[in-house]
Length: 413
Image (cartoon, rainbow, N blue to C red; front, top):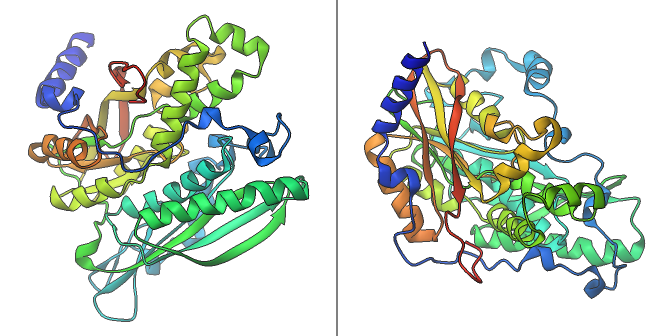
């Protein structure tokens, strides 16, 4: 049996063009946004105490802040009625478990595309936290190919544990970062809701009214497609590793496998990728005839891939065998006691992650090259679509691709 599995894995790898698996940069990088190294954020510059940490205003973060998928499905079971089926008069709709709602409106031929997202603080810099929250919200829209967002409604809760000075210093910066990302996306923040509770959160409701050609219903994967990922994994590992630098016991163990400088660089890379919009990937989904996509977020790569596979019209399986990971983060994840992240199992939480896209095999390499040409960022072919029963899996020993593959002095990527 082992020999059969090995032969199958080799067959899978032969289907993927070598140049697309590694995707070394082919053109000069184009900076989409300029991200100041977040590891250098100094709270004193905002007249706050040196030990001020934005992240202390959230008791739950990452996967711990999300209800398990099985629990969510059970809670939503009462909403699955005839009216919620994926078609309505020939106009497609998405299921309850997908990234964004696609719902026909009264005006013929138009659909309302909408999603909501809320983020707890995961980074120290309030400006970058605002950008990340907006990027995470918009990613759900980009996952269904929507590239023009009509507006975003801001959702903000300020923490009752904050002093007036802390609130007045950081909340405006979070809102500024959120609005900057919205402007970069070609949309605007119009109104919203604010509230007070024990935790600090920021997010939004993104809305777009579209014709049928402006969105891609994520249900059309076919056998022979490949799976493309538009951002590297390992963001949650990098964020945690950075915070562990302040814990002498954990930091001492971590320094046996990674230096403080490497941790800080990984953190800056994570912030950079989390703050980057998935808009270019969404635009290219139309150009290269994508058959569906999902964002990669709090439920990890495998969790989101499984939901996408479950919602396919055809009887297919998703098989993932390449894992692009921020450099050194696979080693950090494996070194933690109990392998709490399960990064190589695809269970590690990702924050404002990339899009996992089903593309025709003959178009995938060109998609990856266009991502590099237009945005200066890599994309990777990480797996295939084969005949099956609408499930997703990661092979037992996936290939870990370090991102970037080579360090460059003075450069983040």
